[in-house]
Image: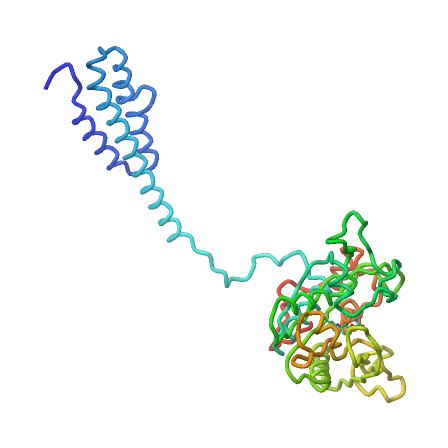
Length: 369
Ligand code: 2NL
């Protein structure tokens, strides 16, 4: 071996050994600096290439560069191994017991509208209904046409519907904020095969504002499409729902003939109330003195024109549907009297009427507080 020439093989062996024994990332980095740093031994060898004759460089260049590449690769692979060891050690030492109660009670609270939506989802899940959602900005077909609401229907008039400008039209159709959650059910009927059992809760919009109406409000609609569905199914479903929601068995419903373009026949549903401590409460005997009826739902058998609009055969598939205001349900159940306070964002109000984030509605523990 030529004495002038450094022993590259020995250097390689030594550096590889140092890399292998480096016990941590810091030790490994020290080896890297020692070999490949600005003043490192391998860097030093690379610098000697410039002083060599072209012939010598042709022989030594590949050797020195090969050494540099081998050492760099060895450092990288040792680094990955050390990092993997570190992660494995962390994973085995850090544990999180998710069953422990929080150290501090959460500061926020659940809005009554959200609470009621959770209750509705829970009650209807037990009856086999899934929750469906859809866009709040809708086109004319999904919000009106498919629902058998003709061009001349008053619900389409400018004073009820928030329309977008002409430049926002989709395929020549006017766009609007949905006026009910029915378009969600239309979207489900056109995208899924029956049988269908869904509820569609969500925000709806109408250009209407007074003590009992806000421009944005919440609605839940329900839809069942199957074979041989009749009014009996509708009646049982609504009775079961209202009893579970108000958590009373002595609830009576009254079905009054009515009209909606999307159902035929249609019925408005009243719930019996009675007077207790000077306050109207849902349930009890509505025929007793101070008792009475309160309208809470609209419903009916899905109009065959709606079923046809969704490309289903109305002789094979029938269904029932219903709709009701969630804000009003919340007021009735939890005793709030001012609708507008719902959307004021007043912290004192939400602290008073809000629900604990830990108070999740379940059928075993009771859906309401
Ligand atoms: C009310 C009345 C109702 C429906 C909504 C509906 C939806 C489809 C087909 C047929 Cl896709 N009907 N929804 C049916 C009857 C009444 O709501 O007074 N809501 C507050």
